[in-house]
Length: 220
Image (cartoon, rainbow, N blue to C red; front, side):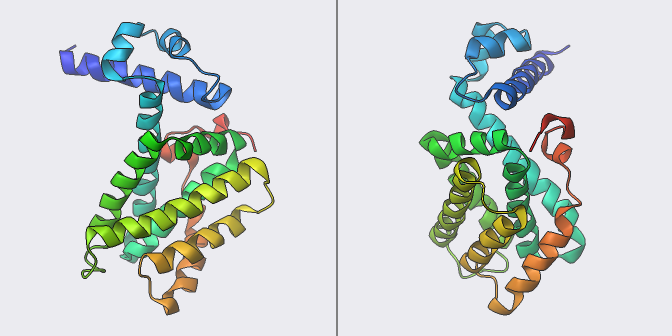
């Protein structure tokens, strides 16, 4: 096995073990030593790839967001509507937190960390500009950043609602998110309701396993 392949194998083992432990035990209760033992990777090798536990968690969080984007893009591809593809991605993030409180708690940790939040905002702004730049050709990067801040604020609020109150259904969370995020991202008012309904229709076509979580890993 070549050096690059060995490095990829080590990283994958660390991330797989960390994902499992974070879901089973929670972020705060999981230690770097436990990740090292569960992955069969020495602490020294682990620190070669990740600066700390937060660095491992950041990588996993970005992986989930990228997975939701790819799964949503695939599900919405035939409609050729970038707003629909992004709506489906955002809605599936709501499904993740609605499916399992433990996932919602992990999202709460992510939004509570500036290191992770800053990375999510930066990557998401770039993605939004790439996907919607052709439709919103008069928008500059700052305007996409502001819209992404609006989206992040609503998502963070829904995460905290799920963790602390849990009084809304998944559908109501999706509707609340999209009714705020779509206008922020320049969707035409007359299209918004149709986008919300189509998103809800397509949402069932994306599985948890498509974004890196096994169906059996979750309990409501």
